[in-house]
Image 1 (tube, rainbow, N blue to C red):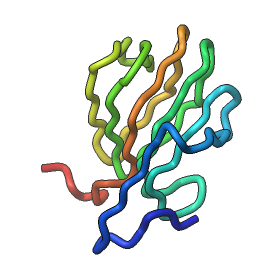
Image 2: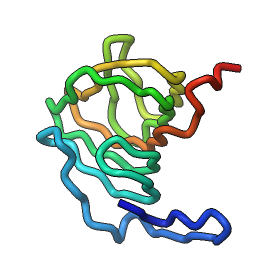
Image 3: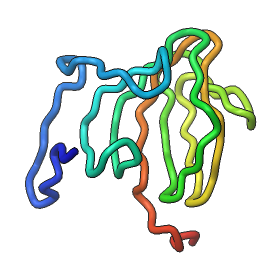
Length: 117
């Protein structure tokens, strides 16, 4: 999938006007803002977790960063309430979810695998 990939052009997207697209995990939906690739992609998205939804443990070879917009995001390292910013380095892994539900802004594969400084 290619979505808003011309980095030489300004892109304006009103995320609230986009449809929610289901992810491979039941109860987790996305509004895709930028994407290069299929399911494992360089991507920027708004992701909504329904109460009790989870992803299975997975790897982030290109890193991940997210900002919790609403609710409480959770993984094995803790609970992250609205306003929390998290950056996971290339090669990190986790099993994310939300007991109460949450919405996050997330960027994936924005780092090179060797970009650890």
